[in-house]
Length: 295
Image 1 (cartoon, rainbow, N blue to C red):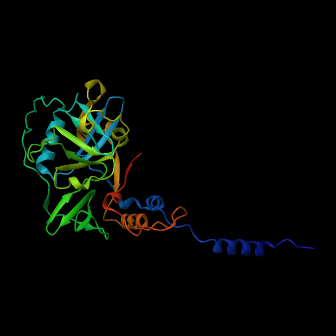
Image 2 (cartoon, rainbow, N blue to C red):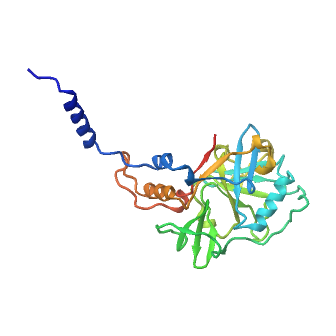
């Protein structure tokens, strides 16, 4: 006859079983779930631009005056003057970019904005809190983060990189004719071959799905061949000019935090149930600091 276990013995058996069950490996999601509040930082509103699209889509774009002060100043002047209101998303090229602005190139610029700006492709590393990633890169001797920004460097020179969601200034063949009248964002694989060939001015932090899930343009280079196919822009403004109740409330994982270091390490060395062989590396564009909405 088998006697039932005493309470003390049952507890001992259960404890031993738990001890024998190894803890589950960390995942990028679990790292973010455990990140303390101090490892997240509110996204400042002074350089946050909000674009509202027909149909209710809303996109928040953080601008980078520390890398492209002239172009960012021009773009912010146009946003504050509501110059983009009533324009369109005029290009969606599969595997490449979504672009918006004035397809006719006829709308007069508002006071305070200028028509021609010198290219701002790179800047000195001096003055930047550059945090290098410990992995090799195809396009630059060294890559890393400066706050929320993916940055490449070569010696004393640094530049923003064309990662998914980064925003650049459209131009023609002349390197000095972009001014922000046409902007684009990368909607597919990073287009790093564009680095230091086009001025990069910011990053889409929220609402990227409204720019990726659009019909592809059937014209050359993904431009729409008729205005009726373009998605209208209802309004573009700076977040700090919106009523407090209507402003985006976002926060970003600080790239100088221990949680960010752990998140990057786990992404590069996945050992959870799905992964058979960890990569042991990660590219810069897969290490952009995560953003979440503050409820």
